[in-house]
Amino acid sequence: MDKTENYEQPLYRRVALRFKCTQCGRCCVGGDDHFVFLCAGEAETIRDYLQLSPAWFHRRYLTRSEGDLVLQSAADGACVFLQNGQCRIYPVRPLQCSTYPFWPEILKSRKHWNLEAERCEGINRELVVPINKIEAALRQFRRC
Ligand code: SF4
Image (cartoon, rainbow, N blue to C red; front, side, top):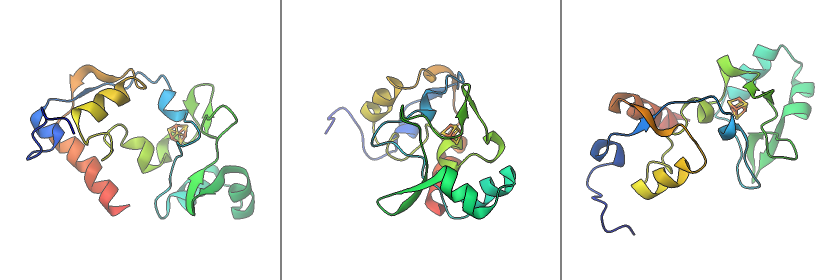
């Protein structure tokens, strides 16, 4: 436990969090324990966007991690939809992608936030993110 933390208020209410996406694509490349999880209905939204048959879409793009539906990834950990550094399904990308880095586990503490900054060059950069935007992301997670 970090004894300098005040746990009465969430991190984003105590500290002005800065984030500006540089479109580096690193958050689209995971590792053995990083997956893009899908909320209910997201697979169908992506399939519809790509205009693919259900069987082909499932075989080519989806898999499971401990029972949860996730996107497939390449051998190097890159998301199956990352192409030349760009997301092929950007307008319908999963909630996990559109809310990054405002995930409950990253917002747990300053230590977690700064650890994530080692992976994401956009964290602690430029713009202070409004609290209402962060809370909107967290609300979406609760509904997922
Ligand atoms: S769906 Fe798009 S934004 Fe999400 S990890 Fe894959 S390439 Fe990145």
